[in-house]
Image 1 (cartoon, rainbow, N blue to C red):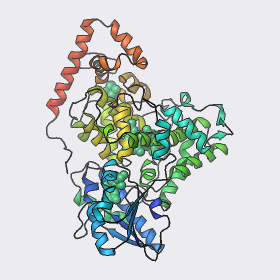
Image 2: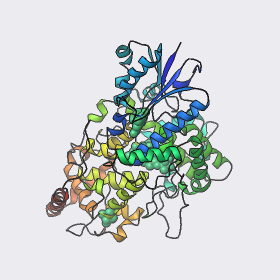
Image 3: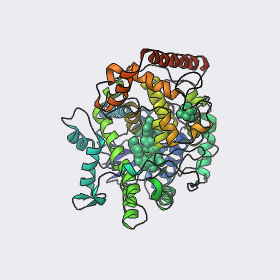
Length: 519
Ligand code: FAD
Ligand code: DLZ
Ligand code: SF4
């Protein structure tokens, strides 16, 4: 039976379920560069270039194997700009008897695709994405009957089920989690390893030229584009991480340092999420490094927990609770996103550094996303939809299934505690402890009030005051609320005045920032 097999830009894995049982003599693989995908948020230029170049390389690899690929380029004549438009045209071209695809990573596409059979009058087989350790139905079984979820318990089940870092029935090293060893600041004399850049080949250069012309107004520099766009190069990036970074990954996982955007992080998420690498091979490579004595357990467990635990957990939550999940706003946050998220033009040095690195690299590591830009968005009460669109646009690894739970749940607490037991709110002291940003900041991190005070200090308490009704009863928030209860009314008034002055100033500074285009 002749099948049309659709492969999306984040499904670039030879073993993807959509290609299972492919018959080279009759089947056609369809790949589409779609305006709708490139424009639904103003994606960073490097993100678009990475995905389109990786798609073109993947299509070439399939063709070299003798597979027929119908590849629709962005600038192809008559490209309708949508997957459904292009599937319709491909049906007219090839007259398949069936459409086969792997479930997409985003709700909006899944919602449209499940109507395709009726729309096109053909059987449409949507297969599980078995690159994940935990299927949607497996997560649903785990989640059944729970009012809120905790990653740690999910993670232990995943360890048992996969056998990763297990010695028989026991966790390797006698503990499930070595996080307490993983919170060191980076000592001044330590220099993290230089990271690999992959020189753009002809295909990538052609894509970069197109991106330069077509996406001029999108956020991000791209002159320094050095991402891997083939499986071969992505595997080389994995080897480099295991060899040079993994041993110290745990120790400095939470550290931040000016001029060192990558530290000991893997920078593998863009490859993992678009399919050039699989979670299984990455976790196995890390475990082998520990078993062979190359990397310590605190590093390897910490690393595997991010992939086997957090990555699978957020995906499970996304699929179990969409589309309602995105509409919750437990803290009624509604402030517009300040322009400086796009321009980086702010006196807060931590924010300026992270935004500048994001613009340069389409990357920031987890603590920068969570405790700098995320912490600011939480404390300032930014509208969840606006900050989610920002995160979805600016990072090379951002797809809604992973971005949304991280931003909506972990950062903004907009789901009221379904994903995390408490908001990750912190004052300037946390940023000062984990980074060198405060040393050269125009604000004083030790100062609590007045125009010189670090904004994170008064915004932290303002957040506690404003959200007292929603948060004071949370047992994990008892410490700040005990302190707040002892605070005299004058100090409370001072905090509120500092916060109002600060927000007024932001509004004044916001002139004609970048707008999220609406399709
Ligand atoms: P490493 O520190 O080397 O971690 C290894 C791998 O673990 C990552 O490659 C990633 O696949 C996985 N991982 C780590 N933390 C998480 C997490 N919280 N959720 C899911 N996977 C995780 N990750 C994305 O892949 N896409 C996103 O759009 C995204 N948006 C985020 C937004 C916010 C506000 C926050 C706080 C986190 C977000 N993350 C996202 C998670 C995490 O920050 C990135 O996965 C990580 O920074 C990628 O860099 P790395 O590959 O060097 O990670
Ligand atoms: C993110 C992205 C972009 C920018 N462009 C394309 C594209 O042109 N064609 C394509 O197949 N996929 C693209 N993607 C990835 C999709 O948006 C992704 O497959 C869905 O968001 C589902 O996760
Ligand atoms: Fe950020 Fe405050 Fe430190 Fe400045 S003083 S870098 S605003 S935490």
